Image (spheres, rainbow, N blue to C red):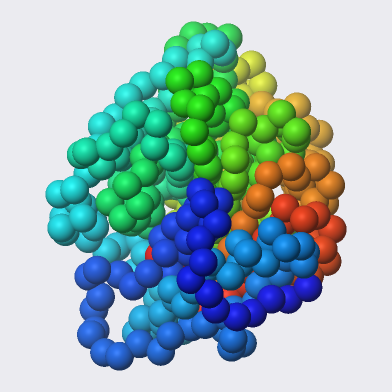
Length: 388
């Protein structure tokens, strides 16, 4: 059913997590370019569609999310909104940044990988305060403005602890291991280890928020762990959950803007390959792929590859044992399996004008009705991580 209405009631940590997710996604930027009155975006308008199964618990959770959303200047343009989310100044320079501490730690997994984790927490906090894990996008990190803004909402406003997983900075510590970190949709060992690591000493509320590809990795964790999931709630923001050929943005980018997005992401991934070149080539199947050939075909790959699918076709499918791209992307498409095996409250926030998530693959009423733990929020604006 589709729900609407306003209330200021609270539903404990779960309602607070959804409120934090909403605030971190839609709150107005501290460093707005133009100051002018903003039109509020409410659940009573066509700006936001909220879908969930009509249980009493779900109605209480939805009613706790009040009119937190505003439309800043220029955000009706999806490309401007996405661009501004990437280039704004660090919100840690403001007053909120003075209320928290941040530190980076490195954890070594049993598989021999070094994962980088950044902790953001209030300067004065209790031992067992709620924790929210944050996963960045495919070419991001803990210093991305949208990640920092979410961490500050969690730590400074809510008084909780934010834990940012820098999965793109994963390091391989011995020759038998090759993990692609941020380039693989199915690589969830780092997240699984981090959650288990936190659970050893934390018995309180533990949630997770994933942006873009970080959300896709989070969903893979939920599918694999099912009823054994160690999270209490999860949220994805601007995350495509369908990578089949229905997703034209991935398989058939058309127009100058779409191709430019692919080019920028691919360039970032190429830099990541160069940075980890010696470690990646230790994998026998990777060392024989085009990017690692010292031939004319290898050189042409570096010059001509300009889509994300080129990276996956050249490297990712080989390390994961897939025969082709379609097999890999079909396995990474997880909405149906998530709907069938979801055992914790899950919030999926996506904008209808997201250039990376076509409207045809947006979850909606059907997915929400199939599982009482599914909460789907589709917004009129917001672009790709363009609202925070």
